[in-house]
Structures are given as C-alpha cells and as structure tokens.
Length: 436
Image (tube, rainbow, N blue to C red; front, side, top):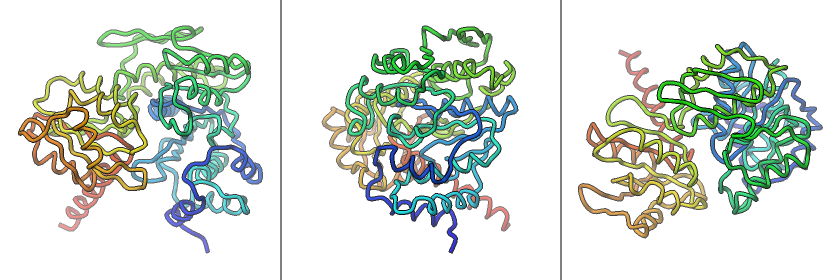
C-alpha cells in the first residue's frame, strides 16, 4: 500500500533509534544501491550560521539568470516540502512520496535517520528533475553529514562558531575541521568567515582545494546607499543591498559572489541577474519583520553567535519604548550566552515551551534569566511562562503598546509555531470570507 508524504514522514521518524547518528557508511551504501548521482552543477553550503541566507541568495540569483535550480535546506518551518525547492517552489508532495518509496525499497535492513532518509529522497528527486544546478545545505557539521556523500563542484563555509558541541567539538578549531571536509581537491572552496580557524585553512591546503578566503581572494565595501564586491578577476559595483535584513548578510552575499565567480565558466551570471536576485530574495524567519504595529521580528537565531547578530540588527532598528521577547529554546544550547547577548535590550521575557525531549522548560529558562540578573515584577520588566510560542505572542500583542516591538527567537521551532499559527489563521479568514 502506497503512503502519502505525511505517512512517510511519520514512518521515518520511527525508523532509527536516535535522531542523529553521524557517519557516511550507511547512507552512502543506500545511495549506491539507489544509483543517486546528480547530473548537474552542485554547490554545498555549510557553516554555523548564514547557510539558509546563502542558499536563498544563490537560488534567487541563479533563477534570475534563467537556470533550473534545485535547493535543499533544513529544517523546514511549516511544511516539509519547503526543504526541497525546484525552481523556487516547494516540491510536489506526491513526487516526494515516490522518492521515499524508492529509498525504502533500496535500504533493505539498513536503518537511516530522519535526516539521512529524507536527504536521499530529495537527492533522487533532484536527480530526475532536469536541473542545471543543485544547492545543498549541509545539515550538521560537514565531515560526517549525509549531504557530504555528494562531491560538490563548489563548497561554501559561511561562518564558524560553537554549536552542536556534543557532536562537533567545543572549539572553533574542532568545528572548523569538521566543516572543512565539504571541500574537495582541485575544486573551489569558499570561506566567508573573516577569521577562519587555522584547521579549516590547513585542511583545504592539505587536500589541494582551491581555497577562496574573505579578505584575501574576495572582499566588499559600501556606504549607506550601495555596496561593491571584488573577487580574483571580477568586480561588481554599485549594487543595492540584499533584500534580506541584517548586518551579516553582506558577508553571506560576498561568499555567494565568490562561488559564482569560481563557477563562471559553467554557470555564467550577468550583473543584471545578480542585482535582481539580491533585490527579490526572501527567507522567512531570518530577521523577518512582519507588517503592522507593534513591530514583530521573527528570527531563528538559536546559538550565541546568531543571537549576537540579532542583537546588532535590533540595535539598528531605532528606538522602541519596550521590547518583548518570545523565547523558546533547546536545553542543550548555551542558553546563558544567548541571554547575555540580549538581556540589556529586552524588557519583558515571555518564555515558551517547545515540543520534544530536548526543549528547555520555560521555568528553567526563567531561573537562568534571574541568575543573569534580569529584572521582573514591574510594569517595565517581567518574566512569564507560556505553553507555546503562539500563546506567548498573543500575550505580548495584548500587553505591548503600538510603538513597542516583539522579538520571536531561540529556535526554528519557536518561529515555526508562530508562522504555522498565522498561516492557519489566514486560511480560516479566507475561508470565512469565501463563505460570506
């Protein structure tokens, strides 16, 4: 009996005893039995933060240049099909279900994690989609991540900071070493982190990768109106800033342009396509400011490095009488460092429970806030606990003034719950109008 996509997702969640099991042996063996091989130009994107933005900008520019593009990113925010975009649109769930069926038939007795199983299904979908280029986001680390079974034509590492320390190590050098393993001998290896760990550089040099470093092989400059970029042989001048908000987006955009220069013989891209691609790029949940009052900012920042960028971006927004934070987080993150990055900028903390065993209990987070010296118990400062991010957001909207701002952050799940609730409300509203 064939399953629909929802049934397949429920099946693969139960298939493996752990959510994460790093290593390529199992997934590579199944890939070989499936005959997975992408016949197009491939670009892998790894790093601690900035992967999603980098993938979105690459996709947008290449679509504007007229290429047929497949983009694999994770996790999704609302629907699983967001993970596999073909020509900018989420994949057809029925086509995804067919690929899940093929993986199931090929795996035999091999148990695959949710991520491994879905990665193979999406790679096979892309294999048969007539693509010119595939953009593949690396899930976790690099060396042992399932996406690393692909020998990419170009690999980008966006930034390196400490996250997933229990899997990747607790130093930038250790993490940089893991991420450098998406590089390949003789092929472009882009690093847009301004201070790359020595381990990353040494590995790239040891394998003979064509290493492009920010500040050495490419750089950017700009003023309030426009910015410019210079690579090894190309310059791109007088560009409008990317539509994605945030001070760190120029570093991501610079890495994108370095990758495109390195592939220019196989994927030529005009200046107009670059301009238009940056102008129209969209990525939900990355410093996404919703219309209306009070201002609502959605950001999937879920580690200290990303929250520090969020803090800088909030500082650039101007004055707001009060800032309300809807904060849901995983307990295995460095929660104290995340709080430290924002505590001077938030007046009211609304702590939200998240699903899953890894989620931090809101009462525990409240204790971390108090330990950090966060004030509460007045009209100017408070700490509250809620059953979900959407419930916390409703409370913030009821209490906030029209000129205040609300920041929703801490996890993909935190932002996803808010976006899913808004999407459901919009569907109900449209249905009600149709009925009338």
